[in-house]
Amino acid sequence: MKDLRFDDLYSPEYYMDVPGNDGRIAIKKFNDARDTMAMAHFSLSYIEDIPSDESGKNFAKTLHIRHAIEDLNNSFDLLLQIPWFYYRIWVEFNRGASLQTRQLKNKNEIIRNTQDWVLLAERDCEYRKVMAYLQTTSNPLEAKINSFFSVYIEGTSKLFTVRSLCNALKHNHALSFEELYEPYDFWLNINGKKINLRDEHIEVGFKQKIYEKDNTDIEVGEIKYDYTDDFSIDYEYAQGEIFRYEDCTDEKYRFKIHDVYKECCEYFDALVDLFEEVYNQIHPQISLLPTLVGENGKPNIKSSEDSISMNDYFTVV
Image (cartoon, rainbow, N blue to C red; front, side):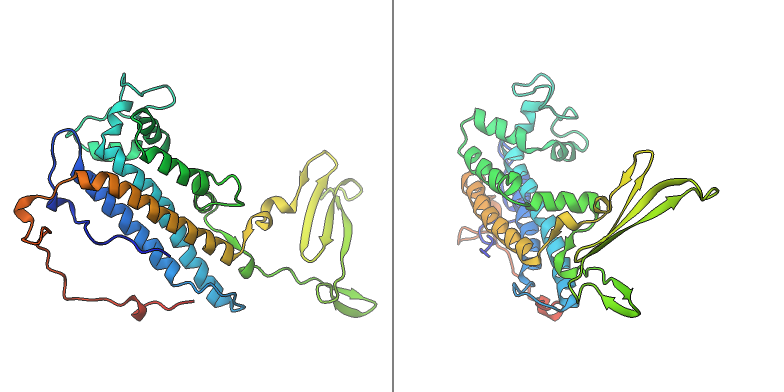
C-alpha cells in the first residue's frame, strides 16, 4: 500500500486564517482524513494475504477488515469536507443561494460563527453539492473526485465496493465470509446405515405435509427440504404464502476474505492519490503563522520521546 503524508502537514494552530476562506478548518479536515486513512492502513497491514484453513486466524482477519472498511468509507467523506470548508461551498446551498435547489439544499441555515455552525456544516456536506460547486467554478478537483467516485464508490462494474460493504455493516451489522461458513452436515439413515450426504456427494429432496394443529385432517401446506451441498427448508402454504430459506440467509452475499482485502487496498491507494491532489491544490494557499515558524521555515515542534510499537499488541494474521 502507498505511504500517507505526514510531513508538511501540521495542526491548525500553526496556520493563518485570512478573509474569504476557512483555512484552519480545512487543515483540521486534512488531518482528520489522513488520520482516519492511517487507521485503515493499520488494520490492513495486520492482514497476511495468504489463504488459511485456521478459523481463528480467518476470524481475526475479518475483524481487521471490518475496521478498515468503516475507516476507508469515512475517509472519503472527510476528504470532501476539505474543499467544502475551504471554499465555503456550504454558503451556496443556504436558502436562496446560487446553487440551492429542491434536491440540493442545506437542512439547516448555516451562518458562520454561530452556535455549532461547523457541526451543522459537517452534517450538510455531501458529494453532489461539492461536485456541483466544483463544476460551476471549473475547479480541476471536480474531475479527480468524480473519477474516484465512479470507480470506488459507485463501482457499477464491481460485485461490491467499500461503500456497499459499509452499508451492509450498517444495515446488517455483519458481513458473511466463505472462510467462516461451515455448510450443514446432513445425515440420513439408509437401510440401517448412517450416511453423510456431503461426504458421499448425495443430493436429496423431500416434502412434509403441514396440518392444522387442532384438526390434523386439514392440510394447510407443506415443508420442502432440499440438500444440495447445503441444507435449505422452504414453507409453502395452501393460502398462497411462501417462505423461502434463501431470504433469511447470506448465501448470495458471502464474500471471500482475499477479495474484500484486495478491494480495500486498491481503494486505499486510490484515496492516497486523491488526497495528494486535494493537498497540492488547497494546502499551498494556506499560510503558516510566522510567529510559530522556525529558521528552517517549519513550525518549532518537538517530537515526543515516547514511542509505541503496535507489534507489542497485534500480530499479523
